[in-house]
Image 1 (cartoon, rainbow, N blue to C red):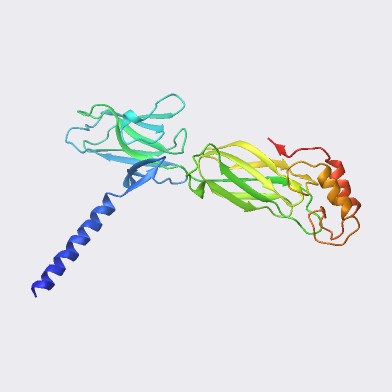
Image 2 (image 1 turned 45 degrees about the horizontal axis):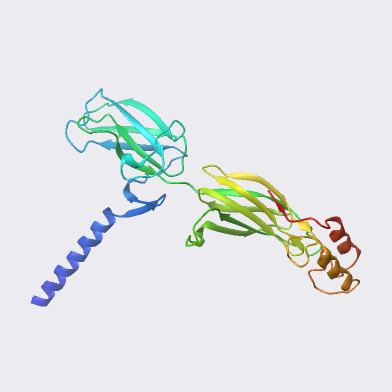
Length: 282
């Protein structure tokens, strides 16, 4: 019985620790560990926050309180940089002596914001009351290349730029286009990215400095030059030589640029039309 009693106590202690860990859970937001319970959830793109006074007399009916939504994440107000283009300011009167609610506000810039209130009695400076997390967006567009009779597709890779070597692969997104070159990359997080499109027998296409902030990006276009048979991203003598050495042969080979199963005039024409051209970089 004594051992059973001890076992029950151990289970209760474990339950208490588990419960405490839930309420004290932290999450990483913008590289900063913050209280996960303070993450605000949007409703139709709008946010709301209610503050209940933690010390009596912080709030008085009729008192003017200011809501500040600042781009960036910090655990103290001093860790934030406030400027005209990083802040949203809302002034509101308190209707009760114990709480104030700011409803349906839209930040000036959504990704990774800190929400503060200012004007509390007896509190020196703004007080952090919540955080707004970056919302992933979609990146879409169309790349041009010689699809041919095999209905070739392109591989689209989106990689965050200027990231350290230990950055996890979650900052790399790879999809296949359809046979018309159209692509869509979902759930892309905030950052500056490089897009690279590749397809067999083509020089790759690269687009740098795609800035992902808070809105979907569509309409990206790019051109993959046909005729890069050896894959060195320039159409030159080696590619022409590959065509000529396999001319009129029926075979599956990168020299079959249009993918019709025969290496012939159309493949030669693809190389000649782009001869001495390098892969396109925007």
